[in-house]
Structure formats: C-alpha cells, structure tokens
Image (tube, rainbow, N blue to C red; front, top):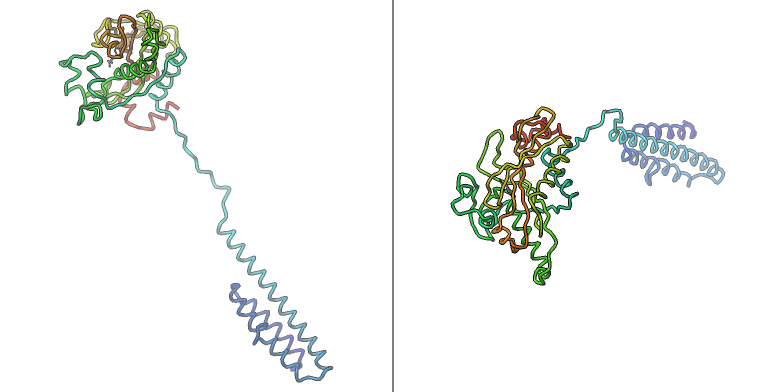
Length: 353
Ligand code: PHE
C-alpha cells in the first residue's frame, strides 16, 4: 500500500467513525482515536523522525493535510450533532399555536351584593355614611339598648341563635337584625363630638346606613336562617317622620328606576321606635302592579334608645328603618324563592352578570 493510500484510508476511517457517533460524548471518544495523544495521526507524526530531511518535508505536509481533513470532518459532525440536539429540543418544547385557547371564566357579583352596592350608592348620594358591625352581638346591643323588654318573644330560644358566653368580650347571639348598629354607630359618633356636646353646641347629624347579614330561627321559601338587612338612621335636631317619607320614597323610586311607585306607611310596633310603621310599596305597572309589598320596618327612634346613644331625647330626634335587601332583590329581578340566593347554583347566579 502506498503511503498516500494509507492516509486516504485514515481520513475515510475517521469520517465513518465520526458519522457513527450518535452523541457529542461518542464523538469525543472517536476523536481521541485519531487526534488524541495516542491517536493514529499522532503515531504517524512520530514515524517522521526516522525519515530523511527531504522525505520529512513531503511526508510531513501530507500528514498535515490528512490531519486537517480529519479535523474538518470532526467539526462538521460536531455541528450536525448540535443542530440535531437543538431540533429535538425545539420539537419537544414546541407550542401548537393553532390549538383553541383555554377560556378563563370571569366571576361576577351575587345578586344580593349588586343590591347592597345599589343601596349604598343611593343613600351615599343622600349623604349617608356606610357602617359595618359584628354579626355576633351582645344581648345589650341586640335587645336591651333597643328598649326590648326581657320577656319579648324575639329573645326566645325559638327565634334567636344563642352561642356560648354572654359578656362584652364573649358575645352571645347572632344578631337578629341590623338595629344594634344604631346604638354602636351613634355611641361612636357621640364620642367623636363629645367636646362640642359638652360645650352645649349642636353636634353634626347622624346619617348612616348599616348593611349586613342577620340571623333568625326561620326557614321556608321566603325566610332563610341567614338573611340580609340594611339599617338606616338619621338623628338630628329636627328630623321628622316627613323626612323618613321623603328619603325612603326617593330611595325606592331610584332603586326600582320608576316614578310609578307608591308607598304606604302602615302603623306597626317595634320596641325601639315610636310611632312605628311597616313600609309597603306598590308598583303601578308590570307583573306586580297593584299588590302591596312589605319592604321595611321603620319609625321615629324611641326616646329610651336616643338616651342609650348618649343623647338627650329632648334635643335629638330622628328616624330609623330596617329593610330587606333580599326581598328588594327578589322584587327587582322577579325571583320567587329566596333560597335560590343561598344555594350557590351557578346556573342561577350567573344570570345576574
Ligand atoms: N329591626 C326591625 C326588624 O328587624 C326593623 C326596624 C328597623 C324597624 C329600624 C324600625 C326601625 O324587623
């Protein structure tokens, strides 16, 4: 075999060895066989030592060419393997942008929440503050301070959820109405304006609504053990029943978006108001036209309650009302079963958004 044939064969051997390498690690092993310290090209170089100066030149040049050809083959294979690796990675990580997107469902407000927001906005525009109070109350705020006698039926086990305890620190019942907020808010208000009152000046009026959850032992199509109420309170030097009528009529007409709505103040009784009235509304048009519908209890705040607020009932007078946002929601949307609001069925709830 001529020396050149040996060199040519060495290049093809390297090429096929590199081609057989399936990974960069395989390729580095193959490279060592040819270009490593004990590799075949190195062996050839060592053989030069025995040759004459003339032969060294020609043979040396030929070996160098062989070496360069092998190095070129190595580089080409390295690049091919790197490209294959990249292709595989891109394929594995590929996103199919033609797939349909995953829909993100949007939440919505509960119909009763929509009503509460509406109530707050309407009374807010009439200058009423919005207050929140505790749902676990003391006997004092829920009953006693509201002039409710010891033997009042609302205090019985059948009507009220009692819990362990019974002190200011450990309240003992789930509030049966939002009326305790009349006392809580007024007491804070009076405290804030103590200095003015002590100087014999007139304090700014109390004008507040207090929406929230309330609880009674009651359950049927129109009563739920948990339900909502919204209290209203306006106390000043000269706040009369006429103001109650104006404010509440305005509220109802704005809430139901109709002027064709009549109100009736039907004499009633509450321990904490005197005189007291149930407020009924009547639509003149639509499916409910002509029927009287009860929406709130109300009245002029009882002097004993004004006293428990820390105010002189000879100087301060006003009205309070307690309405049912659940009822208002049923009337506004034509819902006939109160329990639908609290079952959490999305087929029902999603219709309001
Ligand atoms: N708290 C009464 C109820 O729950 C409603 C009411 C509130 C009546 C304020 C008069 C004044 O029925």
